[in-house]
Image (cartoon, rainbow, N blue to C red; front, side, top):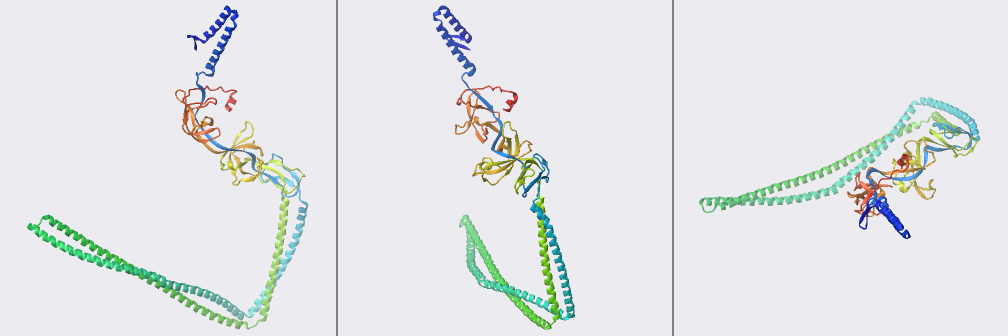
Length: 633
């Protein structure tokens, strides 16, 4: 690099050497003036050195702004909901004491793996329960003896009933004929009463049908008849109109025939005159046209007559059809009335016959009942009393048996309560916490121990209502332990409550704040997460993969439309308008305006870029530290 001084071009090294020589020369010539040349030389060297340092180091491009560029690539855009939650094993629960008592033995320790149904804790028996359990069998034995006595009485009463029934049968056999007749007559009487009631019901139904048929006949005779008469009157009026039209059209035919005859006669006369040469041929042709017009008019008149005849015949057919329908409906209604009247008469005759037969049966029964039989009545009374005694004893037997069953249920419940003294695990699980020791006194519902299945791991969350509105079941989630170098575990949204809960949150410990409970299920057990530990959860609520992305800091938003800076062929920056899509935390989707592989300028923080500004591409910095740290960053 060279510098011009007073028209002389010299290099930097020559310039510094000359300055030193000048300084030495001045010092040699005039020691009294030695300080002034030295100061001038130092100032010149400092000025040149600063300019050289800026040109070589700070601005090697000679005035261009130094910028960095990034290459457009495909990436993934995510929108997530972040929260913290508590780790929990599958089926994790705290078993509680089923009853009041004392801990006899704790059979497990924290970390033990127990199968489903395995015994965990045994409790000492309650003294009152043991006493009741010892007394109840004695009470049940007494009730069993009492039940056996009542059963024996029932058997005796049944034997007495059998004896009474046998005696009654013996007496009845002596009066077989009379009793048989009486039973027959009573059976006949019951059948006749049933038949009479049935016939009366039929009579009511027949009378109802008769009334309905009469009402239908009256309706047809009045309203329907009036409707048909109105319709017939309209059709008659149409017939009169068609007759008038027919007469008119026939007159038109006659007139058309007369006009046609006149035109034909005139045509013959014109043809004769034309042959003689008295008139021109055009007049004959005009007359032929008049003949054709008359023929056409005649045809139209005849067609009109034919059409009028057809319309008249159609209307007459409609009138005949309506008259037939009216006659048929009236005839049908009349037949229904006659049928209903006949049915009523038949049922009334049947009722009179049934009443007559019932009166005769009553006479026969009264005749048979007037013959007294004291021994038979006494035997029947004895049978009724024996039946009553059997019923009473059976009722007593059933009550005592019911009481015995209740006592057996009580002792069974006592046995079940005593069985509750053994606390067992409902699932195959690992013991997480033991809250009691041997000999501890406990009350019903007190916590005994906590267990859970480590083959399933869950994270319980409390989402805000705003976050919960974005979360759906089966969405991907990432779980990380709070702390440095935390490993990420994959999971999905397993449960999401449809109800927001207002109350104290276990995470924020604030009141009157609504939250939505949710659960994340890890895809595979980690074996390292501790139940009850707090972890960070990131739920991916929206994700786009393999789309064009850029860092958010590259996007310029100071114009009506967002844009980025690009380089043209002359290394000058230019604005490029883009369309934004889904925007994440650090990156944003570019829907249009850029393609994969394009270079985008990263604007410097201390210089404002302008379109057409010349820039220089900064060289990439060497990574510091070892390879592993650089790769992690």
